[in-house]
Length: 266
Ligand SMILES: [Zn+2]
Figure 1 (spheres, helix red, strand yellow):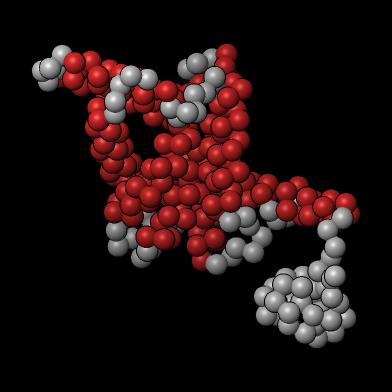
Figure 2 (tube, rainbow, N blue to C red; figure 1 turned 60 degrees about the horizontal axis):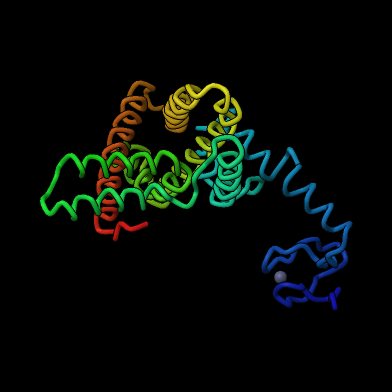
């Protein structure tokens, strides 16, 4: 089943017994049969290893964020987990801690509550700004409760916000900003995950955690753009945050419009 003279992945001939990786596709050669020993080995080297993999990337993301992200953008990537994989793992962990510590609502009953409130508006016949405001409040609350989902949905806008704020700074393109935003979001998830168990006993911890996320973003971007003057990076980070908050507001207005259009019998 497993050939020892050809690459298991792309079928290229193996050059010799000392070949460890296929020169054409990069897969280890010869491919090992998947057994318990293989699984243990994979787990050790992809998850638990402190010199590469998830925990290695997390360590760098939290301890030297700006340098780490710049390293990644500039091509020093081999030891690190892909940003989207890292974000997905952390998002899953977020959903888990939200469920166990914060009584998280993940299916969005809040939005249908918005629909119900909107139904009142229609039933009344006339347009009622107080009702509209109420729906908006419900939507804001839904976004807050579904922090993980909302953050993921807003990721492309976060990238756009910081790209505009750092225009002509470092000459980064939008895909590169997407990677930066993904890492910054992963970082915010680490902070929120660490805060969640405390939040269970001290509700005010969420506010502190969000402030810490803010500080971390500013510090990361300032470090990223070294040796640009620090105060310039800080100002542009704040501008980026401002633009992002505006996008956030537009997003919640759009959600409010959707909630208003929903049939509200839920
Ligand atoms: Zn190959």
